[in-house]
Amino acid sequence: MHRMQQFLYSRPRKMTMLSARLSVLILLLTVFGCPSKHYDSGPDADTDTDVDSELDRTTFEGIELVRIPTGSFTMGAPDDEVGNLGGTETQHVVTLTRDYWIGVTEVTQGQFEALMGYDPSANTACGADCPVETVSWYESAAFGNALSDAAGLASCYDCTGSEAAVVCTVLGNPYECEGYRLPTEAEWEMAARAGTPSALSSGGNIPEFHEEDCGGQLRLSNGTILDDYAVYCGNDQGISEPVASKLPNPWGLHDVHGNVVEWCGDWYERYSDDSVEDPSGPDAGEYRVVRGGAWSSDPLYQRSASRSIGTPAGRDEHAGFRIAHAAPE
Image (cartoon, rainbow, N blue to C red):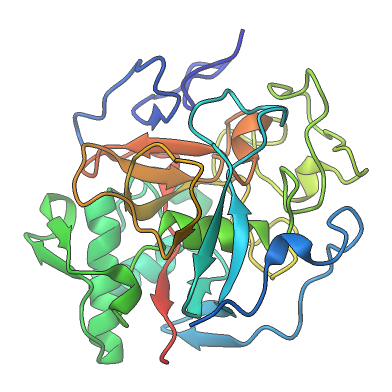
């Protein structure tokens, strides 16, 4: 039987995050111009997994970012993709009309503490190079504002309070804010896929009947090994790992599959099958989008199209974020 909740494990865990499989709502977080490319038509995703060395990179406050060019891609998953539980991953074409920068890794505990003056993480034994976690959507947004302040850029959020008590709201259209912010869900998936239409950015798909396989060394359909790219239930040591411990995707991003799930800027809504341009979710909602798999979640949650949700005040040892911001025009 499929597990409908990303943070329901075969081993007992603290559970506070909520899956986007809305057919079963098990837990609530109470604590808490023209496109230059269509990436799905690029090189053979089953063979071309080398890092694209032509993408620009920059570093600010110790955070390395890669510049993603404008383009179109197919967001979501086909109905027959192994691990797709249906209903929330409807395929549709998305066009992003502005280049953007996105973190090569998840924000680390060391980076967060250096800027914010505290570390909310539960897995502190993992070290400063491990992803910051047990961090709410609000705290993640506040980090973006602090980074914007350091860069002399306009803030993308209106925040009140501090540390775990901070509350933030989005200021206007995220694509028009040049400050640092959480990526939109579309930006996150475009960057995670890196031009690959397959379930994983290594070019492979999960074999049938292996979507919940936590035995380790899971061989994907193209021969790549999931364990080489993701910290997940098949190889986790009961804790997150330092960022970039696994191989990057073709655009040089690490940990888009596994380690910690990542907050995105959008309120959650179900996809339609209509083509869209620069989507950023509804104006209001109850749950924020969470993307990517966690260090002890099943293979099905490591897929590029997998979606989860959480309340913006929710905090969990499996949840962190990576930073993004619009590139100057």
